[in-house]
Image 1 (cartoon, rainbow, N blue to C red):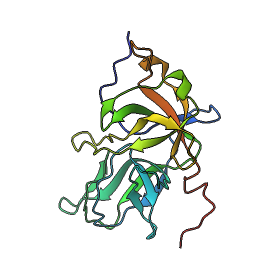
Image 2 (spheres, helix red, strand yellow):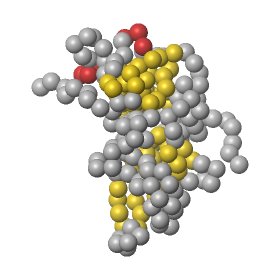
Image 3 (cartoon, one colour):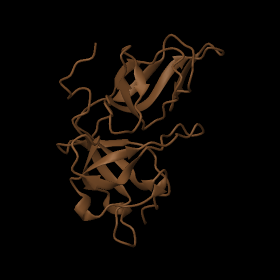
Image 4 (tube, one colour):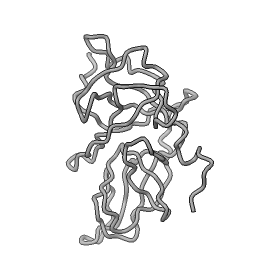
Length: 198
């Protein structure tokens, strides 16, 4: 059976660790501030803000992620029962919002390669071990999935947030390019950075 063609990005998907060990599903729980005004989708990069709560981390050169958002739970302000959700809806008012985050700085993530926005592109074998920027796209409220992707352009710049450490063989296209890659966080990860946060 053929691997399905990659038609759109689906965020950062943890698959294993840089040492080759399987990803066992380990996550940390962090709070999201009541009323936080930005939606966070399954597969988005997140950071711990100065208030000590989880915030969506925009995909840019200044990224300082703590990990990948996998979902959240909270008491619905209207229905008054616990909701378990793939994504955090912006401006939710609840005092018990908990984010589930893959925070291991050594996690390897599968991600779609794009030329711009959500337009699928590919990497060549020569892109392996290059650094790359992430491309920010709005997530899907129907599925709760992120649409973050990785740029088709690799470079040597140490400030770029991810390193391409593998290519997903099953996504090789007819032109010989790989439409999904395996990436790891670079030194900007909050657990690795030696700069503290007051």
